[in-house]
Length: 232
Ligand SMILES: [Zn+2]
Image (cartoon, rainbow, N blue to C red; front, side):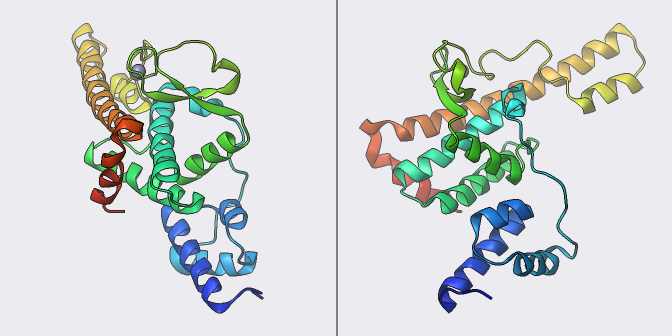
């Protein structure tokens, strides 16, 4: 039985619905909300027509240091910080709004959603636990996700200095293996991967630059305009 007030319980149910719709798993719901486990399972079943998936949440931070996840995680966390520090959203509110903004960005940039809600939440927990931090890129000055132990070493972000094999996704590799392995086919596949990388980097860079500009104290007047102009 919920022991708080009826209105607070109703708010918790609405929060749970929003989190479940965004893809939150049971451990996330139990950590973030005060509703009972049984209540959350019932809500989950009603909304998804399925039982919540079992299994552990990701526990390693290494995933966030690989090329594409690092770009997406950096984008998401910059938006999250903007919403908490400048727009004064509460933690949970900023988490859900930042994730919605991130999804909108992926949709408008026509790029794959790399960061699941669980990954976004875990990222937040790693930051709160002091394992991760943001460093400024030595090239574009955008802030990107790094391990705390590496924070003092100057480095460029994954957008400015992508690894040599960036863009060679599993799908690209699968396409490549089904194509005739002639030099022309191989270079065409590489060309497509490079084009996709170029588009992705451009839009990600624009969004990160926009958030960085908005966080600039000299431009405080523009900050809220950025948030209020984007439907969340
Ligand atoms: Zn950079």
